[in-house]
Amino acid sequence: MTIILVLKLKFSVFKAFIFQKEIILYMKKWFTIIASTFACFILAVIMVIYIYGPNINFYLLPPSPERYGKIAIKKMNTYGYFTNSKAWQKTEKKALVDMHSVHNYDEADAILQKIIKVAGGKHSQIVTTKQITTETEHYEEPTIINDNGLVTIHEPQFQGNTQQANEYANRINDFLFKDKHEIKSIIIDLSNNNGGDMAPMILGVSSIIPDGNILSFFPTMVPVREYP
Image (cartoon, rainbow, N blue to C red; front, top):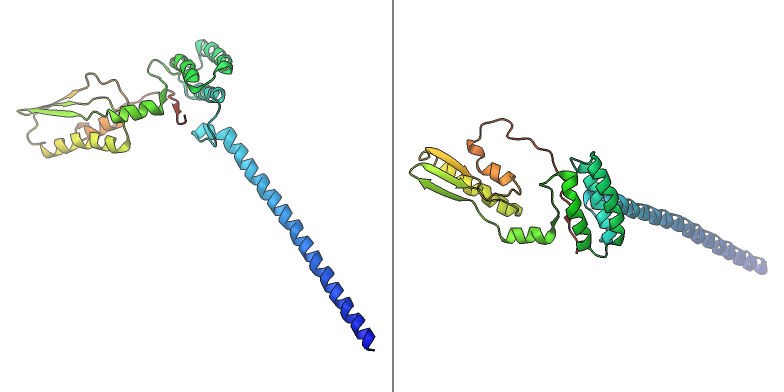
């Protein structure tokens, strides 16, 4: 009787061991399935970002000079105002071929600089991060001269950051509100103004502009390189 009890005890322990092992194998199986599914999902997300990210200027890694150039050409083709012309179709075809031989971003930019005016018109240009930084460092604020009520507001071109844009617009706005009772006439001087961001220029004098549509325009493509 004692022997039988011992055998039953050993058999129960063996069954418990087998059951525990099956549970571990089952959990490992599902863990492998979940981990594989998650890995496939992450890989799919990475592929989607790699393929479509450049459409919103988002890159996982800096593209090769060739891919960078082709992305820029694709954006020109999408947003350029004159891309329905035969001149652009011919230019685009040659540029795509030329991109195969570029070795760095500067060589790609040189090609893009030549063709962007065909796609977007004479005011279109390539703007690099270095150029934006340089223009921000050389920010020129507007000047105001009050000659017995005859006010001359010189608005220079603007291509700065958000803080500088606020300073630009507020400098003019503050003067117009503070000294509005002394102002008889206003001259808006745009001499030597080559353009840039027009928003602070308009906002600065918004208090003297009648309500309604100010202007309308067709956008042109200006690729910005945000990597070395």
